Image (cartoon, rainbow, N blue to C red; front, side, top):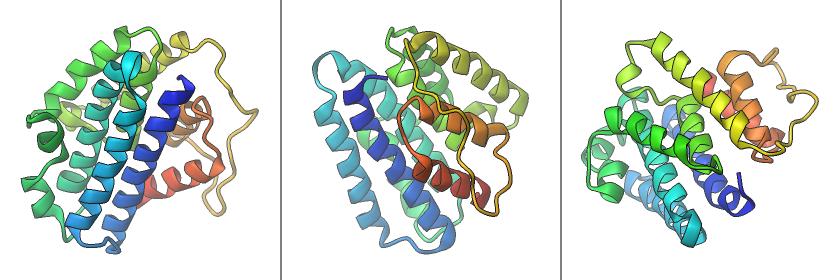
Length: 205
């Protein structure tokens, strides 16, 4: 993933995880304010990804909008759930309401792009919890992850990979999707802080 794209995507991913944690724990602010802050993150990312990176970000932002909508409408019971369903991020940004199918359609387009920028974000969205049409088909979702994890490996020239994942106090060894999340985001040059945050929200949900 290119440096500029990292600068665009990582703050949005962190903002989504932070909002999901606050919603799940009952600590979210007024839903309109939370939404406005997240929208600013998307807008800042779009401003960074101009020119050749614009198409990568268009696809990646759809993946992230789909992820946050599914988390806040389907997966988490919270005070802003009904409001968010009526004001889905996908609808606001793209004018559509078909994330369950369109996510996987656009992921194939992302996989065809040479730099792997958008594809890494699609994989991150699934690791964060997006399931779409595969909600009742975990085997299909795992197969999708395996396929596109390999696609990411092939698209990276020299990924930066630490010798071992971070230790999470009281959490035991990282396994399954959390290990994949570590592997994925080590290539994005995120540190242990993000991994701990992602680990906690994954198990919280």
